[in-house]
Image (tube, rainbow, N blue to C red; front, side, top):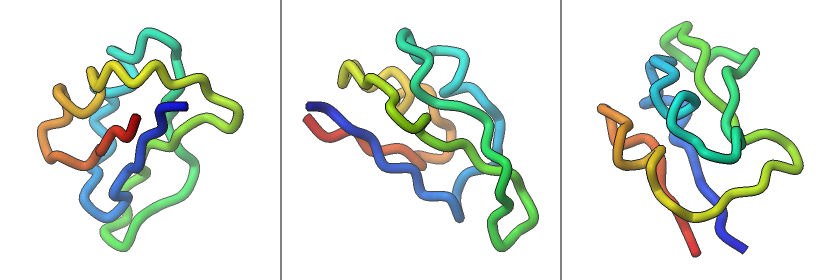
Length: 67
């Protein structure tokens, strides 16, 4: 099953990845990183297709997709 990892310290919370995920598996988080920015999170029970659209659109290369 595909999965993603998100580097919470690099994420600036732009939510571009949330807007392109076809399954809605990424959401705006509620926790803050060391810079005081709310980062995105993979939804618990989210269903990742492994399409990597989130990784492609991320301007800071915070997301890695594993198949």
